[in-house]
Length: 429
Image (tube, rainbow, N blue to C red; front, side, top):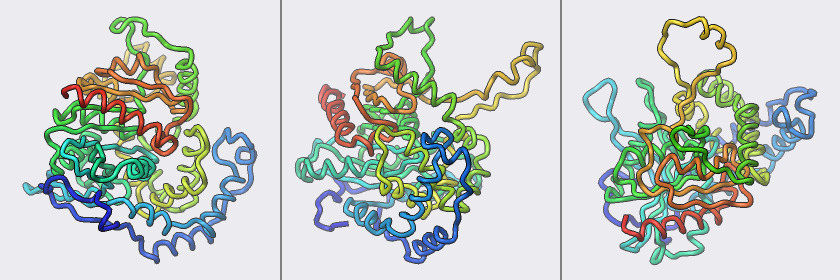
């Protein structure tokens, strides 16, 4: 971290312990990764993995090329240099203990750019899976290029969710839920001096966390999302909501995803332990599982370097098995009850119930809500549907972009965030 960058100075003294953080993975860990790549073998060529369309997942050709590049060419130290060009920190946040009366300390990693302006807007942007704080480096870079510390309009905070990257693992002695993560990130913002008001932005699991924060804490004054998956709102409550032609194309993509692209989520939510062991055993297994998502959930295919940055971070920090808790929460296990004759006739046709925070009345967003629509999002819902989840006052449609909007379209997403905050923050929030 450059000591004279000017972006690392807190606007007020933090009320929680915070230390500067430099990413520097031990050389032995990098060598271990290379050794495992060198000694690992790909599975045999099959009908499924030799199809050029990738219908059945990543192809043999892509895996072979990615393995060779990862082993011989990929430069993790260069990634570290980019990360460390941004101020990074570790915050120690108290959380209740399940076994004692004393609080435990939970370490949360975050990258940040702090402004010297007195009226700067505190803004937290929250990543999802299989993303990380790396998704937002493009936005941070764009802000550095556009503003100096003197005129930066935001204090922008990019945390690593609990269990991800350099943040601590959720406790082993109790169930950790999205509400726990939301509470922890709220404490981080308050500890940084932003209890009077902050804005949130989120995609994927980050959108769930941000939604819960907005529905729980009055300190959240505005919420912007680029991911808001919900089923069609009840027509008896909301009427027949309009769907534009371009939104129908998005719903076709959503339908394909729900039918044919969610096997990973079922495994995550119902067998988190098993898949955690599988993907912790081999970097190639992790590459196949995560690489597939970057190939199929994006509009334009990211560079191999971009994909390997995320996979390498996950491997070196053992993120995958530590980060499955949000998926466990999605699957609803109703209490045992007597079955009717009709119930027995539906046991095969009915899947598991799913819980999505975005259509949970408890988390209806009373604050100003913004929504950015990207055509290659995995579940790009119509703006009229998003409006049923809160006080939607701003929305925008983009001609390109997918699930990883912050990584794929950083300038466009940043422009959306800035326009939304300019509209709602300056109108008396």
